[in-house]
Each structure stands twice: as structure tokens, then as C-alpha cells.
Length: 229
Image (cartoon, rainbow, N blue to C red):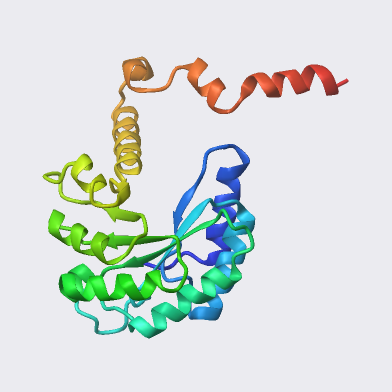
């Protein structure tokens, strides 16, 4: 929908990184504007603590009158400019920048291969492809560029080991954890609203011990003992 601002996005990343030592990979959409906006995006997200991010070639936000469900792409030249700007703006050499393309759905395999080659030439670290339907599509891109491939939500019929053999190093699986949390919240609130007893939810919710571990309660209690007088 592209209604989240860069500032809000960076703030959310900082909240996550304050409580995690894991590497964080994010989707930076179209970089929040043109190539110069992309440079600002790289600066903000790198400072916020991300380890990897992708910039995509989808034309965003959706223009007035654009057919629903139909992606439109910016030109290869404009996207290459964005990716060159992203690489230029990077200060930490360990930050991974991926050029993402939806060309498989819009321009077919040949178009996706051509874009992948152009994006790889900008100095990015990986190619992110969406709309994969067959292993042949992944193989064609793998043969054209010698960069790691990120695959966004491939069909279940494609095995991970087969994708890995064709250069795929990350396979995204959609937003199932978030969707599961939404469903759990809805079911829990519905149960309570309809008069259900909280005790009936015991097997479906985190225990008090799990919740304390999540919020690092032991550290908080330690600080209370040491610093409050």
C-alpha cells in the first residue's frame, strides 16, 4: 500500500534492533522515491541497524487508474540508477543491498533476465525475484548473474533444495507468523467477548514464565534491586 513513511519504518527497525542481536532483513519497497530518496533510505536504514534490504522496480505508489492486481515497472535505466545510488550511499560494506524485480510477472523470463543482468552490473549484492512459478525461471536468472538469489514466496511444489541448487540463498514464506498472530488475537478476543473463561485459553497462550522471558523480566528485577532506593 506504501502508506508507511521512511521515518516510521526506520523507527520500527530501531525498536526491533534494541531487543535483538539477530540480523534483520527488510523490504525497503521502492526506496521511498527517486534515486536521491533511495540514498536517504539507505542512510536511515543502515543507521537503524538492518543487515540487508531490497529495493524494487515496481512503480509505487499505484497510480490512479492502474488496473487492480497488475504491477507496473519503472524503466530498467531508472532502476539501475536507483541501485547505483543505493550502493554509493552505503557506508557499512557488510550491508547487503538486493535489487528486487517483479519482471517475471510483467515481462516474462527474458525480461527478468535482462533486468537481473542490468541490476547486477550496478554493484548490488543479490538479486531478489518475485513471481516465480518454475525452476527454469530461477535457473535462467542464475545462469545470467553470479549473485545470490532471493526468492519471494515460491509455489509449494518447488523444493528448497532444488531452488538452492539454482542459486537461491533465501526463500521467503510470506507473512504467515503475522497472520497467525492476527488470527490468535481475533479468536481470543471473541472467546472473552462471548463470556468464555480465561482459563479455557491456557493451552493456547504463552505462560507467565514465557512472557517474563520475552520482556526480560529478570534484568528488570535486577535493576530494581541495584538502583532503586
